[in-house]
Length: 113
Image (cartoon, rainbow, N blue to C red; front, side, top):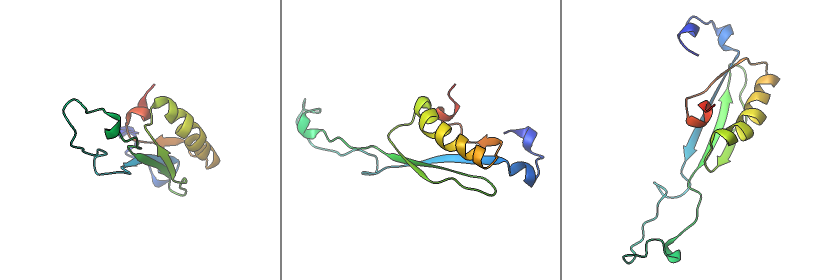
């Protein structure tokens, strides 16, 4: 979408699906746990804790419809964005509701070629 769409009517915008994601941390504030260890033992097994760094969710809305909220775990890159989100969720939803345009942010997975 761009300046060429600034004169669109409500009917024009009814064919658009707005999609976005939100990330949230499921552990401590910045995802790190601090430990006072001895010099040279930074990566000792007793100091390593495996955990999910974050989870995210994605949903879409249009004038008359909304998608289900989809919770995603781990990082999303361009390949799994296509396989996990775009093809099975977004495109099938747009076809089912006869939406012709998708508006999303410029996050790297969304705009990779």
